[in-house]
Image (cartoon, rainbow, N blue to C red; front, side):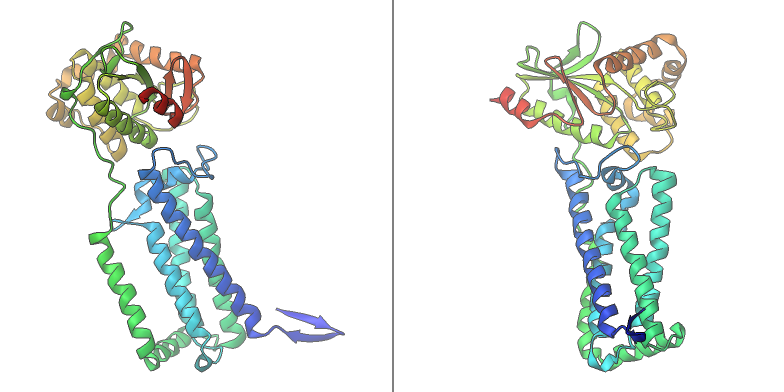
Length: 390
């Protein structure tokens, strides 16, 4: 990279490269802070929705809800935060006069190369498993690839260019500055090793209390309800057992009903976003949610709907294959009866009635709620609940 002045080629100075890579890494560090904050709020803030939750395929919240967003009991964003912090420290060392503009670039190249390969792996996971993209994660990938390029180019422009021999020289450089380097590396190493043991696992949602403490029954249309027998506020939920936001909101509403058992009633309706049962869904999505809903319909006939409801939210969150033997053991439901739920028309008819009525109400995504005839998708406005509770 050069610029021309009166037909004379003048090369850029070291600072023309050093400052951009430092600013790019700082931007990546800030981005990781945002991603870590967003990851925390997705699980703990009932009304949170990130600005990049644009659609089913471009949704930062969907990526944050994935089990792939957590590695060794620590959010990936925190590992990224530590990584960018370490890279910033390496850049500070590269700015030392003793580094002579040559040192630390091979080391930075190999570190950013490893991070770039991991970014490609995460991109693969987003594409083929999560099937959703996070805009801020993509920004993080761009930052890492930019660091990789700059470290390679600066080493070529000012360093030894031999990245293998340069790495050995960088390690020797660190040994020569061990009094400065050792405390920082030790602190980062101890934090990284210990984090899986003490970092709060806020992504494990608190399960609701057993339903036997609450009144329950069925509406005149045969839909299961929980809470007040003569409610001041009735909330009708349309949910999908494989939908994270449905589970989070349901747990919140259950706690709300537990706190107000004489004034709030929660009515459950099924709306699985499964292409096998829901005409709204055109391609495979939440495969298996329809079968869980059919099992819940059967459990309602056995007077075990709410116990099954809680358990199916857990099964849906794990995205594991459904074993009828395990369900039988957990809920004391007969396997033959559950198998009938997949075959008999009457069970499918009940599920299709819920889906049809949801479509007639204008539901396009889950969770969805109906209160006093009005539809609310995603969440319930706090003003509605506050007014009812007041």
